[in-house]
Image (cartoon, rainbow, N blue to C red):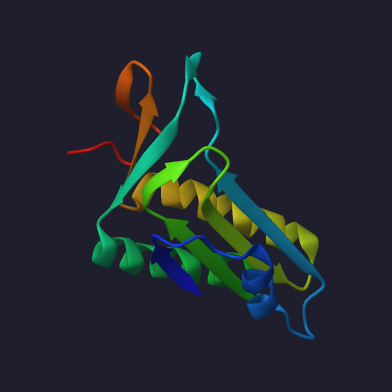
Length: 140
């Protein structure tokens, strides 16, 4: 399951989609908007995405994780638009026979998203907006 959306997502629903009788572990990562960054107060974030390319890259990453780590399935949901403090930004969920592979695959997916997917984050602060570098590709 790959989804790029402006809508919030249900962690429970994503996990339900990954359940099967052959799994013994489910590992998740949920990224949320925090209220501070690098010593600055943050009021929210603006996430921008190049939809078509992001979907293609996320599918490549998903398939690579399944093949490389031998996990059963990977779900990736990433939001974009204007998000407030404590709102969900992203979820990665991995189902596998064993926990070790699930943890490794989840970290792999997270790091690959940061490296490869055209998603940009701008933090909104009282001093103005600041593009976050190193999280995703910076704006071009």
